[in-house]
Length: 313
Image (tube, rainbow, N blue to C red):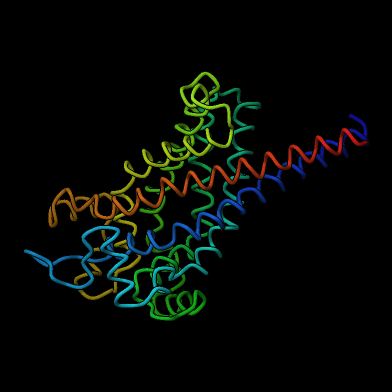
């Protein structure tokens, strides 16, 4: 391959990476604006622990709509978008990195290691999410604590600097293991399901000829399945990140992930591991639909622009 061919190949790779990152960023921004209120409700539901018997605490929510109504009544409309700035700070760059990494890992596993499409999708999804989650772990921690209402009006930098000062740098990755237990399986299940649902010989492609509609429906279905399966890990992750370290709560923080699962199931019942499943599904399903719809739409626009440039040259 000569220098000209090298230059063309490099340009195409750079263009592809930019398009993937930009499309993912647009999708992530749209998703964050729509889904943040449900994320706030879900976080508060999971962070709240009821006393024995009937819970009469105002922080107890009967469901997503009840949670929204109580938050709006007690804290105002803006509270439903608490942490949106943090979410955008996290979601836009992390999603760009995540989608780009997934695309790169998937192509590498198929072309260099000759893995089957399903195997490559599963491994690429889990690997890309593990990398992204670890890198952006401190920002996710700050978002969870802000949305739970325990940090008042502190900014992300204030939350992180206080934690680092009071509990050490390692505390910035508090709850990383439960987050990985949640995000890596979620990503593996999601991408495998999404690619299967999008198959040209599948039911969705038979129902409609629109690639965007197929992406919306596939994103909804795959996101719902992945979210439901990983809800117990999401509960543990939220508890670990949102707790105030009192004497009793520090015991929970010191437990391993599996020990935390057993503790919650034993002390509060198995159903408590599905706390927030309603808001989580209500958030994740449309979020995945919006994310993939926007992502595929922007990628399609880039593709059409390339065709126009080629036809005019």
